[in-house]
Image (cartoon, helix red, strand yellow):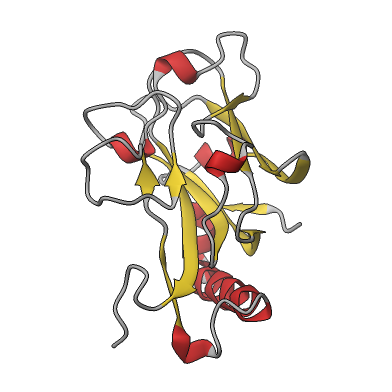
Length: 198
């Protein structure tokens, strides 16, 4: 897998737009390969919607249900509650019911992840592990992504979960607290599932 590039470096060198475009093309290609749509014009790629399925925020649907304990203020759809952060400073899942079929990618959809951002007031993230079932897709050691002005990073590639794939995302924070780490995630699906055909 490609190495993670800190946001400051990706933006300064003009990589960030090409990384997003590349991820979009790869997720679209996978959706076509899986027969989710007949052609490119029948599939839309949009930002994935995160959050607790039971909450009333933003939409009545979620592409990825996170996090294990819902927060009710701030960036709640991207929040990791202190109760979900492992006090022994080890990896801990941040998706509710992670790795179970109940938390799998929905039918007729593909999800891709190509980066992360951290809006925590006192960041402590050291690593992120991405899994499909029991298989580790990638492991990001992210501390170098905090050396500049922008907290976060991107890969020049994309991690892909296909329809019905169980998704697990683990994070490691150095100390307990509430954190606001988001993921650059996109979803490819047929038009008219969420977004109407133009």
